[in-house]
Length: 182
Image 1 (cartoon, one colour):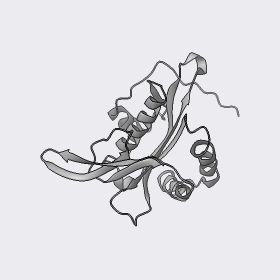
Image 2: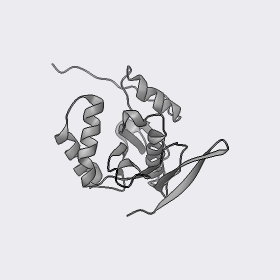
Image 3: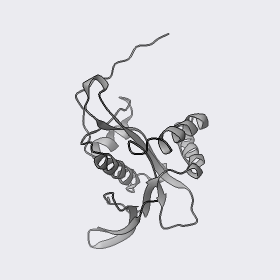
Image 4: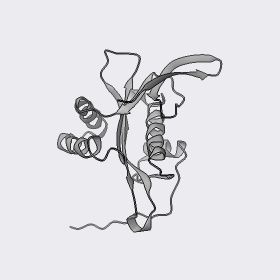
């Protein structure tokens, strides 16, 4: 189990709440107490509920499969992280999650981190939860030896586009292609 550290984050001259992240990850500015850690089996119902609220699609079988593949196997190159409220010990609700893996040599790409899922409770957006998750998975990728991170989003998905751009991501050297298979 990872060690956690509490950090006091200052906003101007006024100290705000604390952020708790794995001691090997970077902290980020936030005005909510957040702890980022690896997913556990008990978290999956909360992941399913959050995803259902956000996407309006219930995908329990999918999320259970993702947990089996990304929460339990090849943990040195697959990362399923969750954010929780550090201040309210009785609040078991997750604030968000992020999932990614290291991929290598797809169409000549050198090893890099790929983020394929990110979700934050809608009322907790703009409170640093997404940034804390992004920084935590970035650090996991760095520790695993990769120096680049990628993701893919729909062209009309403005919210994730704005978030990833705000975290420093930009268009990369690859073009995604697709074909309907009728």
